Length: 234
Image: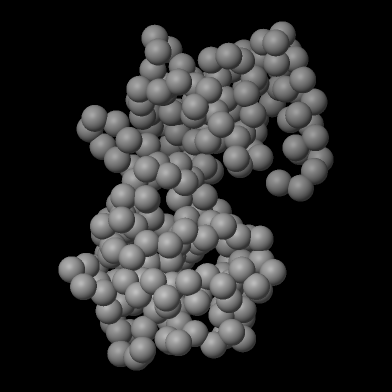
């Protein structure tokens, strides 16, 4: 899991990082000392699964940071770091998962990370941040039916029938999507969400919305990948 820690006290952030590192969970941790830097990361990199936010920070406090994160579409877990638990109303507003009192207790951190890990496995909140001239929007992987490249532009075809256009290379987008094992490339111009396939018919993947996606000879192993996906753990 990718964990973001935002705390203006770098020593406190490192203390929490060390506890998580020593807990044995498979995680990568990034640290920021200002809310502005944390927001920049959210807009330009892989979306964190969990964000630990210090409430009492100068310029932009943790609650304001959490509000802006939610406004930008962040749906991951937020945990507030604080010396007091007097922020119940604010935490409810931004749907915070929990509080962690400072200085953090090692056993409490391990218990909390375990709960977060279980929640992440049960949820389906992973996705991709799309940035176009008109919008910046977080799209859940489960809501993407397939992507298609035409005239040097990538089109995201969503399961609800919507379409989003982005100037990007399909190789770049494919690598981001295929972090999630439900996505596979079946043609140089198409990457599909295998959960949204209705059936394989000849050399085509028929999606739930009726779209017929070609399976090229270069990606002849796609059908086998799809069958293995159906038979294996999703």
